[in-house]
Image 1 (spheres, rainbow, N blue to C red):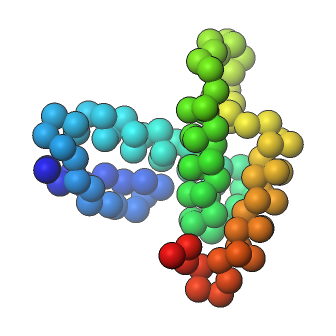
Image 2 (image 1 turned 180 degrees about the vertical axis):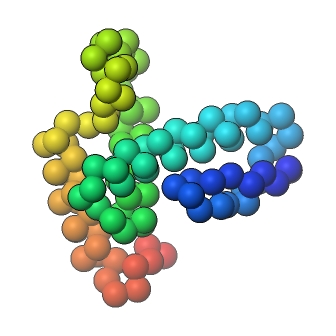
Length: 108
C-alpha cells in the first residue's frame, strides 16, 4: 500500500492507496474536495464536519441515480446535484444527527 498526501479544503491528509490505485484515489479526492468546497462556498454551513456529511450525502445520492447527461446550463454553472428542497431536507437530517450524536459528536 502506497501512502499519498492529498488536500481537501486546504487540509492535508495522508491516505493509503493500493499499488496502481493512485489515480483513482486522486480522482475521488478531487470529487470530495469539489463537493465540500461547493457547500462551503454557498456560505450557509461553516463547520467542516457538517460540510463533510452533506458532501458525503450528495455524492452517495449521485451514485444512486441513473447516469444522466448534464445539460449545457448545468455544465456551465457546475450546479449542485441536489435541489434547494433536497438540501434543506439534508440540513434537517443533519440536525437530527447532531441530536443523536449527543455532546461527544461521535457515532461509535
